[in-house]
Image 1 (cartoon, rainbow, N blue to C red):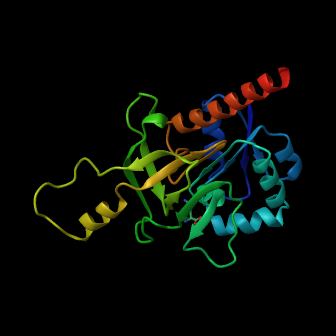
Image 2 (cartoon, rainbow, N blue to C red):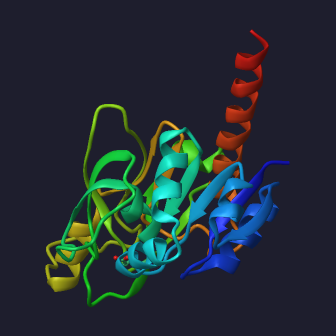
Length: 227
Ligand code: GLN
């Protein structure tokens, strides 16, 4: 079983720890550089990316996490975690930095500040694993505006099934239209990011996808060292 850490400075840490365990990993909270050094992979939870950026520095983890990312550690970021993994961020305070690593531009709070939380159907064949659609929960979520050539798009939003037929047109329709067709999950090498919160609820498929990435990585490392 791989040991996967969850950055535990802020955000929904417990939910990620539980989802990782049901996905077949050993899960441990990470608050200190020594704890980071002991894990095979890391999850950056949802919360508030500006706060997490500051806390990463205050806890002397910003540099060490960047170094591990550069050295190839698998990392999964959800929501605020997605923002932390983005090379470029729109609608951020001037002093907000990111760890970076994924060649993408994300827009913070893109789904609208008024709508705090909602569910939206996805098109995400690789994450579904043939077990039916994922129910994605978005909370003041970013979306991905643009990805570089090495980035694989794993999920986009689709229109809700109950969309009204006919000529009806109002603000709610416009918002639903705006939210449709957005990139909300990506993989770039060993980095995975979702704009939604797969740790909420009982469905551990996204965490299983990540734990499989970590396992593939371990297999590749063994093969390399034996050749
Ligand atoms: N809007 C938050 C941010 O910018 C992210 C929200 C979340 O993680 N649920 O960090």
